[in-house]
Every structure is written in C-alpha cells, then in structure tokens.
Image 1: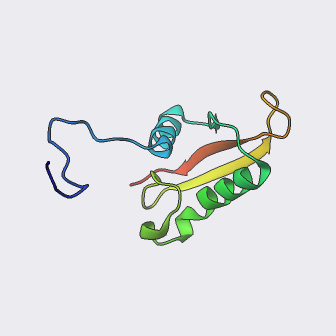
Image 2: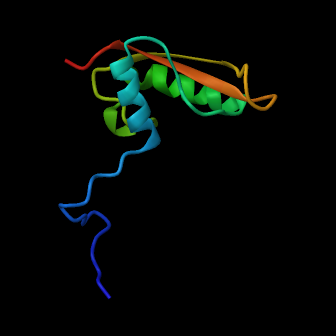
Image 3: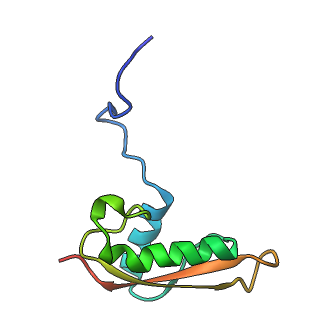
Length: 100
C-alpha cells in the first residue's frame, strides 16, 4: 500500500480542472455573455451570481468560485430557465476586465 499526500500527483497525469475553471476559461474565450451550462435553484443561482460579481472585492484566497483570477471583474445575471424543469434557474456570465 502506498501512502502519500493528496498533492502528490504523478507528473504524467494531467491536472484536473473543476467545472468552474473550465466554464470561466470558455467565457474568457467567448468574448460576450455566456450561459453557464447548468440548472440551479433560485437561491443557488442568486448566490453564485453574487459570488462572481463580488469576487473582485475579495481576497483571492477567499473567492468561492474557483477559477476567477486576481484582477478580473465579471458581470453575472440569473433568471428563470426558459428550458428544463419548471422552477429551475440559469446563470449568465461575462468577463468585464481581463487579467493584465
């Protein structure tokens, strides 16, 4: 049995990327408003939107949405989903100020 730290990742293994890392990277390349490809409850959609918008005002170590880079400013909006189950909500994001 091998023991070691959870941070000991073999060099030949690609780094894992979280949903938000991938989504924010796609939005950076998109260049406009982008629909986040998931459905949320109203409360979760509102909280995610708030976390994204306010990330520019937080210490980078305390940002809740992983993948937002220091110096970036994002806009985010949530709304009722026009498709999918009734009561579901979606989040839209747009990069305002890229990292310099």
